Every structure is written in C-alpha cells, then in structure tokens.
Length: 192
Image (cartoon, rainbow, N blue to C red; front, side, top):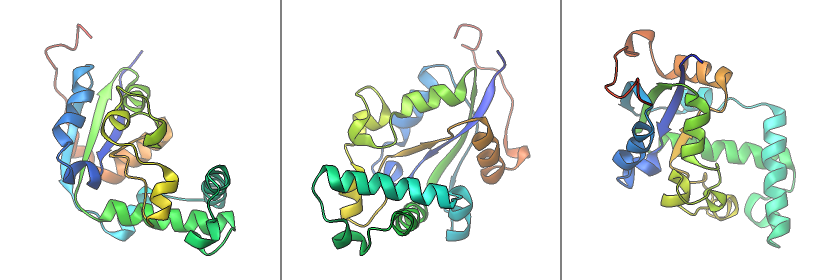
C-alpha cells in the first residue's frame, strides 16, 4: 500500500493548554511522518472554508443536538432559542468558526501508510466524552457536545484530523502550498 497524506490540526484549545508536544508525539510514535508544519492564526473566511457546510450537515448536527437534549432532559429552546435542527446546526457551525479563529493553530501534513485512518484512531472520537482512554481526546479532555452547547461554544476536542482521502486532499490544499510539503526519510521508516 502506498503512503498517504492527511491534515492534522492542533486546535487552539490544545495549543493554549500546552498539549502540543504531547499531541504531536502521539503521531510520531507510531511511525507517521510530519512533512509540513506551521503555526498560523486564521480569520473567519479561512475558517469557513475549512468547515464547509451543507444543509444536510446543518440538519445532522442539529438533530444530534436535539437527541442529546432529549436524552439528558435539557430544554433546547433555552440554549438555542429554537428547536429547528437547521438553525441549531448553523449555531454550531458559528461556534466551530469562533473556536478555530480564537487563537493560533498548529497545522500539519502527516504522511504514512494508512495515515488518515491512523490519525483518526489516535485522536479518538470527535466528542471527547465518548473517546476511549489511550486516545488524545480520551486522555486529555472529557468535554461533551451538550456541555459545550450550554456554554455557547464549540466542543473543545483538541485536534482535527481529515476523515477521508477527499477531505484530506481538500484540507491540505487549503492549509498548505505545495512548496511547504517536504520529502525526507525517517530512520525508522523501514521498520514500522
């Protein structure tokens, strides 16, 4: 199998908590290779490009929120002012943009065999409350979607990893110029 590239971000919450080194080392320890890395501050327009949304995305996120509210017997209208899934999804998207623009981000292109699948496994479930111990999110945060919603903010889940090859290609091209992605050989490449 050929090596693939994926985008990984240490989000503002990971950076300001001083977890960057611990997070980055998780990917390196399994033999993945960092081929590009930079510290950047993004603006709203850039963040909206990183989080492209569709009506289906708004509905899915809104319905997930409604399910959580029902499960925990929480009044959704109190927090969102609506029970319309699409409107709730728009609010969550706004919070995601606010989070990504709140402080600098470490952006990386990581390369390796099964890099996309491996980085996602190392990161853990998107909602830290359900991430298993041993993953970045399972070890360093316990945030839930609902607790974040109540606070009027995005889920503090420390990292972003591309979910598939199409998303990885789009995100790498968004965050990096081709000249910023380097080639080199790691000492352990033939062993791992």
